[in-house]
Image (cartoon, rainbow, N blue to C red; front, side, top):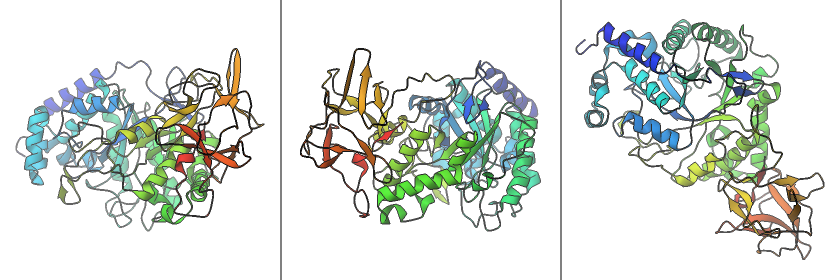
Length: 528
């Protein structure tokens, strides 16, 4: 094939990539009960974004819009320490595609002339190199910017994912040969054996279809896990569930049986549509969110209790603001994720795709970056998920026994306006360490070395809530337990609420049950 790259060039590129990324001091990663830890035994929380590289061009998205290192740097600047980098199986089992097709040829094949010109402008060094080397270059770029990588086998044939009718939905489907899949996993694991920022491999995205069974899941996922570990014992081995990775219930009574220890992670996906189209709209949000808390525990959250790490490897919503159901879901999901302090990867960093489902230049409504891949798409959205980026508990994490009181709607936390012992309350950054304590007697207070002040019940409806010496008992009510209620000075039941200036005020408790049109999120506070 024209423009093919010589084997010597491929070898030198691979060798240089490997050597340049073997300088880390705390890799590889391991598991310790439900936590992911480094070699020192300290928790490393995966706070990732997805970077798709599995669509038809088989080139990481965005390289026609910005230099590769600029995207990697932007990922780090947004607070992410990790990328779930997707890849199609054919990149590993089709040598012609991997080693003989260059970026230029791939883009020309799909008529992506404008996008190819963008590659020339922003990343000219990759135009005439094979697709596998571009994939390596992206990993290398992320490593230079101190970003870890999870290699995710997204599907077999390059393209958008996913539906039950896909020819590569489950083991044994026309485009999903288990033996070729394991071969591809082994090759990918081997290529990145000495690349330390590659900390994990996700074996397959969203297993699904009309013929998928837990019996076959055990048969093939366990074989795949053993194949990856044998080829690269350094990486975490990440297994997805059934039903588009929304279901791990089958593991409750029959754990995975593997020959190796301290490397197994399970993954789960959760979007608004995972819970059924229309459900977030037609139900009372408090009641439905509470039901979903219980569902998430049944379908995967129980693994945390059994001592396994759970990786929420896809979640997200339309950031343009018009996704009514998605907005409701995000408030509920963020409260859950903050309380559980799980590892996660938001979908996705993508601003715009080269070529998706037969169309050029498709904007990613869920994307963290804008269509130019330069600016943050939605700063409020980023602020909300920034609360779950740092670890709050686990091995090596300083535990000061203080509560954080998180407001999922804004991504802020309950704080004092001033250091006065009778300060009014407001919302502020969750990084501010407020010494909140909540006793079983229902007293919400701030304890400091020389003083104690608590939430007072003197507030009238619509007025500011403040601290003082006249403590009032609070109760966390409604099905979600996220309404913080107390008696006001006239004896009526009120709840903490937030006004348009982020001041915390007392208002009538709303949307506790029944009405599906009522919006409770301004009164939702999650203790963690």
